[in-house]
Amino acid sequence: MARAQAWGPRVPTLVLTLGPAVLLVLAAVATWNQPAEYYSDVTVATSWGEFLFGVPIGVALGTVLLSWWAPRLGSRLLAAAFVAIALEDGPAGVADDFVLGDWVLAALCAAWVLLVAFDSWCLIRQRAASEWLPAPRTGSSPWYAEPHRAARFALAAGLAAAISFGLARYVDWQQEAREYATRAMPIQATVTAVDHFVDSVRVDVAGKEVELFVNDSSRHPVGSTYTVYTDPLGRMGPYGVEDVDPDGWADMGIPIGFGVLGIYVLLVEIPRRRRGVEHLATHGGPGVRALVTWHRYENGLEVFARDDPAGRSPLFLLGGLVELYEGSLPRTQDWGEDPDDDADWADDDVDWADDDLEPRRPLYEARVVGLGGDGCLTVIHIDGAEEGIALGSTRPSRDPWTLRTRLVRHWDRLTGRARDLDVR
Image (cartoon, rainbow, N blue to C red; front, side, top):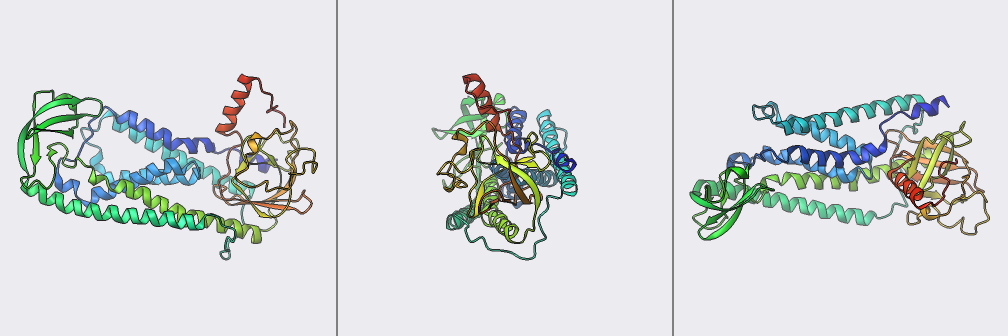
């Protein structure tokens, strides 16, 4: 039990899953009313430094989606993106106009980096205390049953093509914008409308209304004049003195960073995890004895310490299970009476949350192999079934009380539906 208790203290998976999305919302709220600081210099807007500045921002946005599939991987990538942005911004980021919103945003980023560092320390401590470690890798094993391989390669190829196209268009815009700056003609245009929500103004340019973004729309009331640059050759549209890039081409690094993260997940992370699970299944050793049972709502297994026969303190939840070799494991206490017990029970398409489970769930003897790092490489050998069964998981271990569990539990209380959630 001492080893099991050592596994407990760590940052909840739910915090790492929802954290990036919450940070994004808080960052938007903190900086909403401050100047947008658009590019006012064509040389700066078209520099490769500004382009590269957007790449970690794109990675940070991608972690909002990645964290739902790989919370700890997403949290670490987000922390690394924050550090990269801070290093790229440099000392110039702390200036006299460093407003309150910037300080709040910096504090949020620093807090997230510290949270990830604390979680990593907890995992290292658990690794030394609980010994849920896989055998050393001596080589790679192919994942013969890997599904959707062609779809992943096709999607990665599509992302690579989109990145190449975006880079080509960015280089074209970069050259055109620099040439445009040398021939642009400034004119004084009249402000005809103001949008204070998004900080934009509409100006009359040669009888045509054009919308341009500004840093503070309150400084440009209707009827005032605003400096606009126009192209005497008519090849490019007008731009304002405060925003030389109204089409946002200078931010092309953001979608490219998002795409690079997607390619990494499709071609590197998913195959790496599957090969690791295949290796654990064949060369992972005997593993650690434990008890397992079905989670009441999630499609996965709860894992308990062997000296917790009552199943009162679940250590973690493993979802996304894949059947590695044939076997059967009943889902109710009436072992083997249901003729459907042997039917593809580990298939991801089956929603076990809708099954009417018995209040007293049986615990089965099992051997857990892996669970190193963020717990994303795990094999469970269940010896209780007649033929034995092995399940592999490439998803991180999760806290048993998931967001879905909490929502359904409160809904059952409101509707009076009895599921006897507290009996283990």
